[in-house]
Length: 120
Image (cartoon, rainbow, N blue to C red; front, side):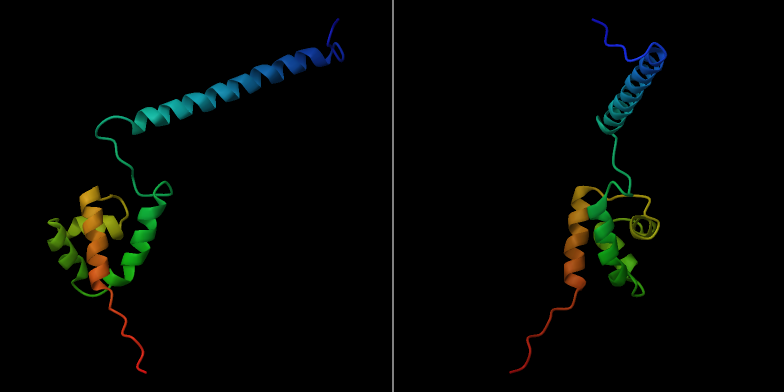
């Protein structure tokens, strides 16, 4: 029993099936390539849409780093050149390692003023 709808439709259906399989294969290849790029040593994330937590931390740090000399103080505490702090928070071209990211969070909490309780 044939499943053909019409003789003229069969070649078109075959072509659509081939195109669909090619599209699936291309997506799978791209996914495998991305996994290979991120696996192994010396591969790190770059700042961008794939790093939403870092982007949020950068947004929180902007008012703290606006004060004159704040970037230099942070750089001194992290043991980095001031330019590296600029690359983290202004240029957004680099990410710190885990230890320095934690140190940045600690520094940020120390810089925020402690709220005073309301007087009764």
